[in-house]
Picture 1 (cartoon, rainbow over the protein chains, first blue to last red):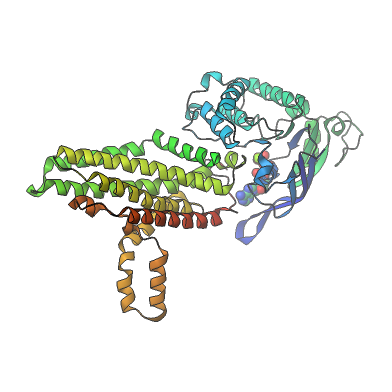
Picture 2: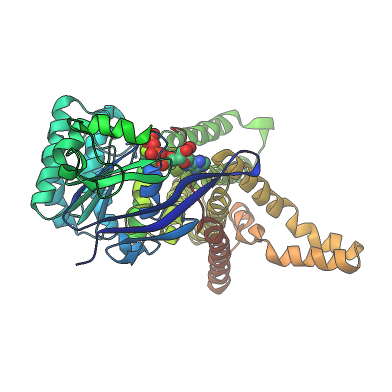
Length: 253
Length: 262
Ligand SMILES: Nc1ncnc2c1ncn2[C@@H]1O[C@H](COP(=O)(O)OP(=O)(O)OP(=O)(O)O)[C@@H](O)[C@H]1O
Ligand SMILES: [Mg+2]
């Protein structure tokens, strides 16, 4: 079975000040097997969003390869089985929640009948049934985050890429997201998400990667990563009694 | 195709839910009513006067609308960050351009139809009338013109901010409108490379004046030949295709900034 995500020696440079270049990613290699929930951690500016942008074909890598289900990410076909929730939940404010889902589904070529059923289901899933026919301009930050998640799931994707899915959500909303991720795993879907909420990551992830200044500094199965003395797949082993948070801080500092 | 239509539908929805199109309509109507009420300078032939000024106003309104709607689309997607979830769908950048263009074209074409109907109504109130066939031809050709203007607006906005793109579209369309028909005269007085250059410009830039049937409408001349109208429309669509292709070349590999939020 092919991996859901395969990244090899990925380098991304942005034009920096005075003609120089900012290296956002410096030879990142990473793979996520199908059916895994992968937590992508790292301090602000580590390159998490940049990695996702390469995976979705928004930016071309300076060097290296990225593949989704064995399709090169530069191919539009690679995005057929993907759902994506962006970092900033901004959207077409003149649409209603239901219309947004409808539009998103049409872009995947779904039929009207399928979409009607699907959007009702998704609105219930993210708890927005009562606000479904209101303009998105009237939504709160957390509601936009929820509708963003719903539109990411409209094509019943096999791989869901979520950029900080819990930011801006209330405690109930966070629990909800955790449940949704767990339900996706139940159904054999792959979830690749970034987060700053380490306790959350600890609870839902099978595997964790820690990124710092464009390199992976530690990676491994959640259980192994913070088990004392066990070497992580990459990076230093954890110290006895260390939590993910303590380990994270030691790794990135 | 379904993706292009969905994107066009989005542009349409945005337009009918925004206020600017209604503002333009109300302004136009108010202006026409004032014009009718004033009977400026005691002009006897008030109907042809109304027709002439009314058509000019309708043209200006539809020009403004075409430029502002088309040049705004892509920069707005980028500024609001909506381009990211959009491109995360199996939508190619070519489809984004075509959908935006189609939406802008249909919106401005429909608004222009409303302008024409409004004007025809006013003229009828004054006891005049337009030739029905000529009016339909005038609208069809106006559609051809709008195809070019919206394509230009979209093409410029692939690499420019919305304001810069619309300013440039205004300047280019105005220059093509006012200056281009005079270029052959200029070329006569020039020589050598300058002359060749002028003639290249003359043939390469869009000839917007071809789409203008206003005088036929004002003076009640008979309709133009169907073949000529069709040919001009084809010319308009070809020009639009050229500009969209250029826009696509600029857009294909564009790296998006993360918008105002970052
Ligand atoms: N368009 C751009 N131009 C220049 N530099 C950029 C651009 N986009 C990102 N960067 C830089 O790339 C680096 C990685 O940014 P990225 O957004 O991927 O970080 P992140 O891990 O998602 O951070 P956060 O946790 O804050 O979301 C940062 O140093 C950022 O300044
Ligand atoms: Mg980020």
